[in-house]
Length: 383
Image 1 (cartoon, helix red, strand yellow):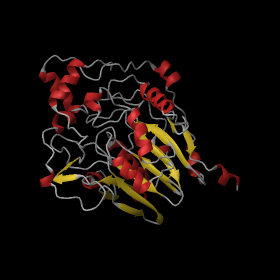
Image 2: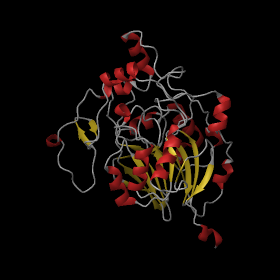
Image 3: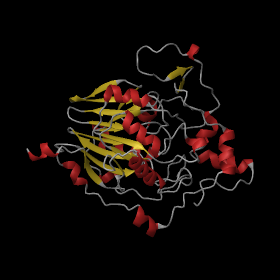
Image 4: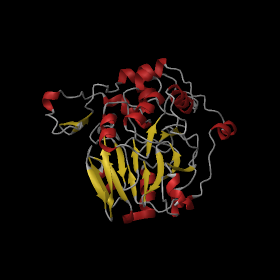
């Protein structure tokens, strides 16, 4: 599919396409306005909380602007697609896929965070005797239907049946490129009751209906120790985004990131987000992080995407705000969701790091399927 949107041959064509496209969400998300502060009540402590009124969640920051149908139509009609995704031969050269040796995750990780980028926002990490999977999407498309919608241009480097033992899955929100029903069901078939799911508030029923047995539903700043591993806790963290799975459920479930705090290492997963002041709060309360997984793609055009998707420059801001020792760029190079050139997220990230005189080893990208031990303490390895 050369273009994200079909030719505009009439409103009916646009509407029919939006039924299965992820950006149906954007067309309807603006139908409800953010309530004023007088209706939400005061914050009970120093951390910023999501706003909640009449069964709907709202972002609390002035940096948020809800997408509207008029914005979507402007995007369709006026914006040019610059993604220029090439054929397999060139993709194999510039965005190669690595066949991972997943037995690496069967071995103890004495120091650092063992990390594999599966693609988009799916990352597998192991540290401090716990293995965590983020936003697992293994399907060919991220869409409400299997026959249309955004399709992978880079395949998954492994299948769910090949994955090692996993203790927990964290879900950032319910958009189709972050929550995939087929993957959820297959993970349940493989791990069953041995797998614990961490989801934002309002998502537990969907997860249970999909076959998940142990589901922890949490709101921002809520902390829970991991059962059987009391020295590890999971923390729901704020993000500037929104939620929608069907036609009438806009913002009925919360969205957010996750921090996994261990005795020696700390991992942060930003999920999907625009830039906001919440990241400084995360850094102050839970930083520094050994590793942070931060989105760097799906950001053009900025007038449309800025409130909900950071660009590489803002990704570096998040890296600094949360006090990450190392960061991994995610949310790029897998599905065609927006219009920036397909390799630009990586290129812009490296340019911004050089501009700020930050080592390129501090904020990296990985190839699909590449495994790397990040944040290794060389001295402890010598002991």
